[in-house]
Length: 224
Ligand SMILES: [Zn+2]
Image (cartoon, rainbow, N blue to C red; front, side):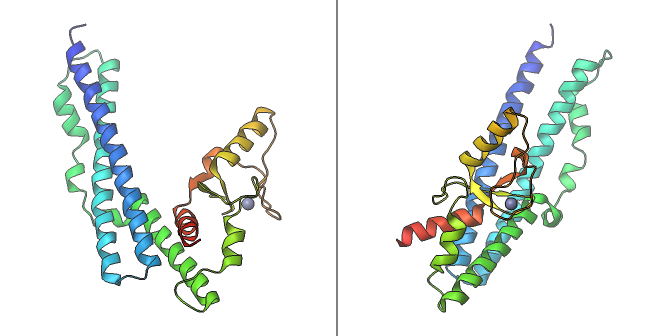
């Protein structure tokens, strides 16, 4: 077809944008992990404010890239579906009309930022709880930590913690995903393996990485 060249360009553009999106996810992870360190090491709150503002900037970059990808996909779809000729570039711009008006201020309600702020809050609570129990700012309460760090499936210290969004429990990522896969293969419902938990219909999609727990585990490994 005559338009094979433009559509190749669109695929290239989409690939580049997806790369961009992955880079952006890496930056978000790094910013999160550095901020968690800052909270743990009790650094000057103004430094944490700087990180929060860097995260707003990054959330803005990320949501723009996301919108570019959506717009390109919509144009691609239009080309496939519409008989009538149109100018792909101007339609692309049309889809992106609102992107330039997005501001960092808008990002304060963006899921990326809200999730980040939630993680900071959890970290503050964890550090607070552990310090208070320990009576100093440095150590962690071994008992509390060890219990939280052990996976209920493998019975050993978690390396890659994920959290169940539904009940809040943690597990080793590979172990819990395998458990869900096996049970679902036999058409069985999956119960949360934490003793006493009522949650009995677990799904892969309920799991998310638990950066705060990961940080705490890494810290405790380093202190050994
Ligand atoms: Zn549970």
